[in-house]
Length: 274
Image (cartoon, rainbow, N blue to C red):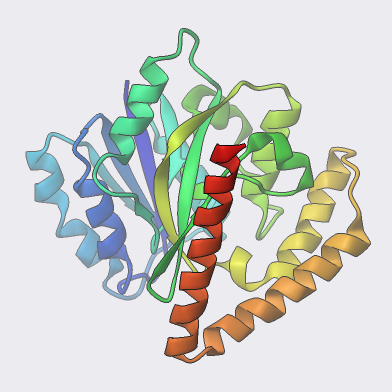
């Protein structure tokens, strides 16, 4: 079994090394690594090329494609075209595979299945100002929004080559594709491990209200019902809170993170007792 890991980037010289290193340090080398660059004008490609020998020494196919495209989802579709593995996962510039065993945990879980799933997914860490916040995933809640971390989703290559991302969407094409596969009755498998670490600053966690508005269009396209008023109110509140968190003094931010971590641990313990 082989996993196709795709990274899309454009002028990411500050972040691309971190992402590449997270792939290179994986203990299980049953993968190929594809970088689709939107014709960067900084040192992104130079940095990416500097890793070629390291991947070759580990016997890993390392592909770099740099050309002008129409944006992130165009680049992701280019990555799909190049993929030759059994499953495709997107770890875009600025995000990372978690630890050194992410690929191993994926492959071990898939090998346990008598019938391979169409979509496999795990959990993610949301990294903000140096703190890691564990985020669970659940495909059963997809009709209410993107309930799976995009960085932890693997789609069978034969399926994603047929479906691809709808580039009419600027923020939520990943949600559109995942929801479509769910509504089509594709088989989803949850992997009980953290697959990726994604960092605050991505468009979907900065433009929260815009993300929600686009999710309405996506759900309308599939005749999925939702409460627009309630979701707009929650999105507005979340967007204000995200801006507030970025302005918190470091000491207050640290205290808040510790409190949230303790609350999660207490909730987990209470659930175990029940």
